[in-house]
Length: 259
Image (cartoon, rainbow, N blue to C red; front, top):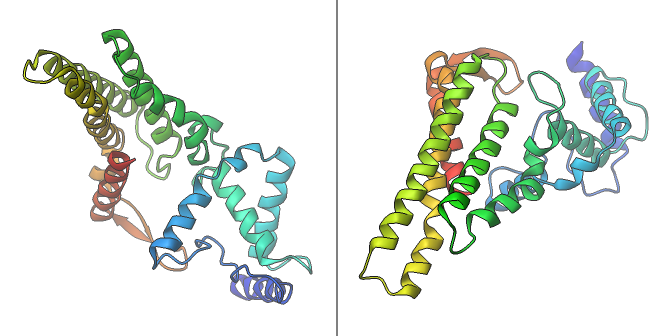
């Protein structure tokens, strides 16, 4: 019955889209083809689009209701694919997929540019003191920890102690590596002042990359022990997998290190 309703909604949306360039809407699926780099690139641009930070409560409710209407086959005539894709983008940007609760604005994926950029600039400031190095590394890992927690897999609840362990582990590793590398650079007499300054500019990268990996593994260690839910192509739960959890964390950690 649900499939029939969804098919009816899809047909209604398709009929209203004869003159638009938006692809046919698929609930829960990416708008852009994931088989090409450009498609994946556009997909992630959608995810980090900061414009979704300014969506009003009323617009969010309308987006959620539109998707519910589509799901149950009660979509009103004239709704376009573009409207459906926009509604899904808004919902996914603001609401947690497991709890349907609003994610605090600074910790959304769409908040990465406005809230993360100042931290990145702070990490790259030249001639930093010990205090400023510690401060920016602490702030960066605090932000990362909150982002990881806010976007966690809520189908596998984990105790608060895991969050604290991940947070402390990330902060300690980031600060230790950053301070240690800075001390080594300062004591490297073979470096000219210009070379020393250049090397110092790259110190934040290994510190942040290693700390981000530590943060992810410690905060989501429960997923490695218990596995994560695996869904089929129709969104139905088929079981729990530790292999999928390892693969997800590897991709997540690599992505953190790269950005």
